[in-house]
Amino acid sequence: MADEIQSLVDQIDTGRPSVARMYDHYLGGKDNYAVDRNAADQMMLAVPESKEMVRANRAFLVRAVHYMAAELGIRQFLDIGSGLPTQQNVHEVAQAVSPDSRVVYVDHDPHAVVHGRALLATGENTAFVHGDLLRTEDILKDAKVGELIDFGEPVAVLIVAILHFVSDEDDPSGIIEQLHEAMAPGSHLAISHVLDDPRSHAIGKILTASGAPPWYPRPQEEVVRFFDGFDLVEPGVAVLPRWRPPAPAAVPLHPAPASASASADELHWQVAGIARRD
Image (cartoon, rainbow, N blue to C red; front, side):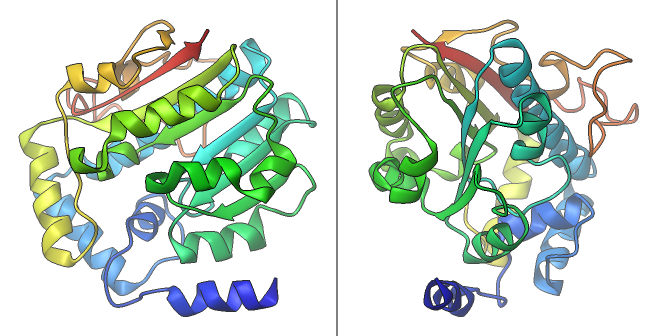
């Protein structure tokens, strides 16, 4: 284990921005470097609501996990592309509903994995795996995943703010199909995705220029097609603040939902949805 951690540490690249660390900066974390903050600040200059979009995306994740744990009774969660630990992580939300909930985080960023294992994988029902969505089969066959996730029972698969980093050449629909085949009936898939919009393209140019991985905004109808073979739950694929917005007295969300200064109309360039595998 020590050798594996050292190998991951050796792979951490502090010379170019990491999307996981940029998100960490937006969410008020400290696990980031100047190169990440500079790229994130450039995004803020180009698209001022970028920070609110990140916060709204995180708030969707919290609502989604709480919905699937509390209302659907799902007790196992596979979070692919989880990023760096922050507040209200998946295991915290799910285990607040049911302490026996099992959560496996997966990320290809070695920095995220090192910090994730140190901060998150401290209980027997939580693990952090080094894996890549582009190699879905490896994730599904991973021994640590198999220790906690029983694919013969309903599982929640979370692909939040990650699929738009997968190019068409890498066959995102094929990735979803692999997951669909592995998921038992009653399982649910959660996706959030950046839309084809001038603001998302402006951010994409900054990511590319800074050396961060490029992203691939898509029209909403293409995002909807990612759920082919699943049954979308209400309200379907919706802009982030409009996907089951919390009631005033609902469970508190940290980070908070997008502020009043960033309305649902202003944040219409990222959408999310959850669907059931029958």
